[in-house]
Length: 190
Image (cartoon, rainbow, N blue to C red; front, side, top):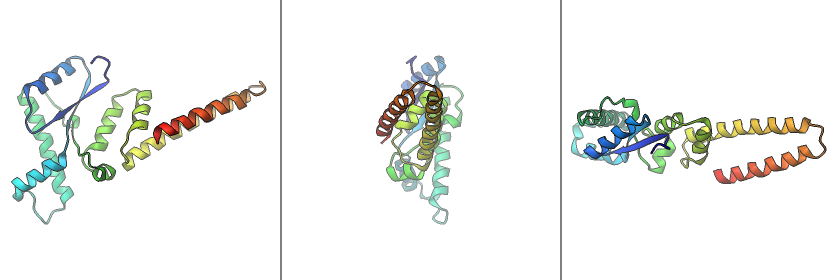
């Protein structure tokens, strides 16, 4: 556990003392801890069925869903604190759903969770995580493009510096190595 950069703990409607114990142990190690409540779409539909008065028909579903999400975050925070975990920052609680359409639209807190995970990592680990993230939301694609642009500038600078050296064939050899490694990187991202 010492080798991990951060931890994700998945929450449900009912938290157990085991979850709180694990969270306390992670906190003792000084590691970042993110609480995730998944399947938000299912929980919202259950809440809509059980409490229809909380879901007026004249308000857009996104407004109502964000209100319910805020309630879920507050409930998770209060439950963790009541079970003895200690102070919980609501910024460390994320409500997500893994359905492709909702991930692509950036619904719920998936983008915020990814950013929180990225911010918990070193630059090299951030690059690995973003390159291997498999969701196709606009935010993820934009972040992947930024990483690729930075890498392209670094590669171009390296190739230019090597080409400036007066060693015959060195520039061509380095260019071939760069092209092969860049191609394998592109294949890994596909």
